[in-house]
Length: 316
Image 1 (cartoon, rainbow, N blue to C red):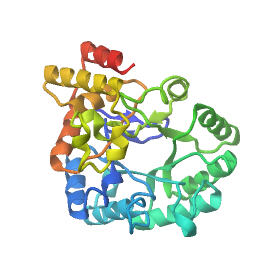
Image 2: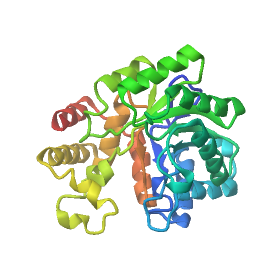
Image 3: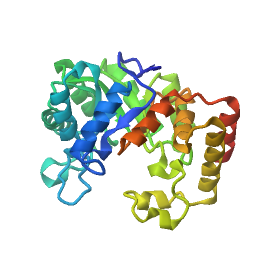
């Protein structure tokens, strides 16, 4: 399975990063273990999580996803065969706090390491920019973790082009580890936030890109065509915003190309992202083995020029 390097890091990723936000949310521990086993066996050995997953659920404090991955890692073994990416910085409540201060990062990573039952995190990311903390302080905190061997590489999520460029310049100037990856919002119905200045910066600076919401909360699977389809959807509120003429035009184009290529709309949507030079690997989740099989097939699907052009036209 083709793999892409993550910036200048020695980490290389499979075509799709398995999204761990579902663990402890829409996938219970038993299902999560089965999905992780199947993903690893299929070659999708990179998983993305965060300390805040799934704090949004009543009764959850955050860390549920990491804890499930940790139990799986301990029981499965072979830590060196798995790439674990996690994030810190979002609000973990009045006790744990939030932000990217040195104190918060150093405390957050220790909590994550305990939950993940590992000595190191392959890719540790700033979940969201914190403009109240100097970038120098944030990068120095990450640098200390790299020096201690607790983190292999660092990345950013939800940074603007200006802030990412500033962070890269500071790392170069001070001789600190730099952000090797960016995790932006990006999919066929939400292209403008990433394409343009941010995408060009990532290309010119060789920053890996592992975009989230790659299937637009499930909208790009094509299964949501009316309000009635949202009745039992875990992300109903997130999906509804895509119910626009342009959104449905994209789904129509995906359906047409999927039929032509004997694939599914979701597989075609992911393959379109994988084919884009700036994208290292989109993040995608699965809550069943059937859905996971779809991710594996998407990673193997090669789009022709006709499919890429049709999707480009429909999504602009």
